[in-house]
Length: 345
Image (cartoon, rainbow, N blue to C red; front, top):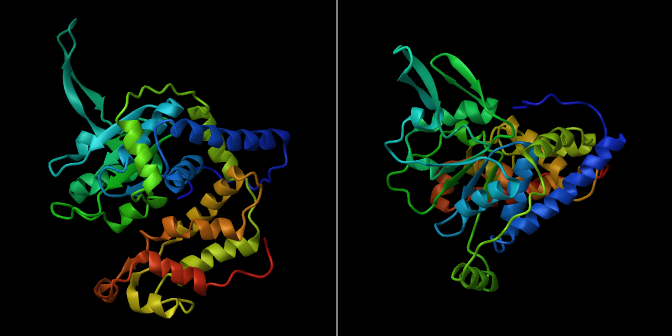
């Protein structure tokens, strides 16, 4: 899963410390710019920004009308990054995402040759809208791009420009005509972000502002090159061994055959989380620490990210479905059952 080279270096150099300060300030300014359009949903915005700083991809799940698409599109505007939206439908083909070779004729010579025409995956921020509305064959067209930041077509490999992110959306209430994402696809998403209806006051502000004229002008507080630098900086943040082991203990306890699994996991879980979950708990914790003005990862950082990291990686069985046991309730049990080490941070 680690695509960037990890450097075992603490944040000791003046350049790293200055970059850390710029990252925290940049995060705050991005939030301020997003608030010109996006009202409330602070936890959603926070998890989306952590995705950016780590260099991952995230799945955003919520009913229609909660600004999932608007959030990602506005984020691309604020960052001045190339944005591409792909509406997933049952008849969408893999080549509609990655691109294809076309026959073109040279006007001067009359010679015909195959020329590659890039698809919408060639952008900095790709929004896979309603990703579960297309069959697995087409969903899989995203796998290489999400993991390797490249696509292979007709035996030729094309590298995607950095930074590169995939944000996918799902509507949880319309199941007819949908195709559940394969586990391999789900595991490539850093976070499963749940977006819900806002409180009354925030919803009132949404109605008030969106029914009036809107033409916000955005500053550009962070560039694409800054994001790439932030991603490398995140991997330099030190993590104490007890914190690292705590993240791994949470993940291992989610597996029903593990001797540390709580009784609820043994009864309700078919398959637990993969090693990517522990990696993203640590990487997300590093980014969360930096954006909070700290240069080390705490147990609270890991616990705060347990739900978005684990909820799509813990696969429930029939018993859980029949009893109405949700993955969020299983993660709650894991947080209760796995002890935080006394020593550490």
